[in-house]
Amino acid sequence: MFSMLRQLIALLILTVTIAGQPKQMTRREALIAALIRDALQGNERARRQVFDLLLLMEASASAEPQTATTTEEDSALIEAYLKRHAAAPAAKKID
Image (cartoon, rainbow, N blue to C red):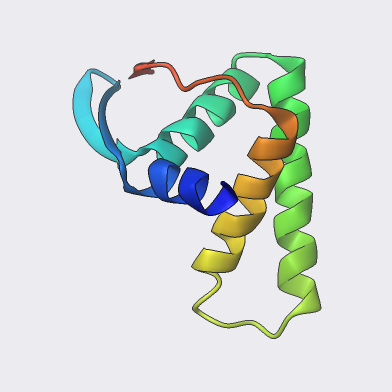
């Protein structure tokens, strides 16, 4: 089930509006963009989630040798975090 969720989030492309311009992104990117948007708009829960994600990313980066191929590992951390915290669906319009 986790594998199927990962594939659905990573592969499906959405068209969203950012600053008045259409942009294509994966659902994963849209979820993260919406979470960051909500945090910047003052949503305290979203702000805590963004900071928790940043701490996870920093801990992961400091525990491992620095490489240019950490994208998959970062994605797995983000997916696991979003699954645990049942993030709200991404909005179609992102300002």
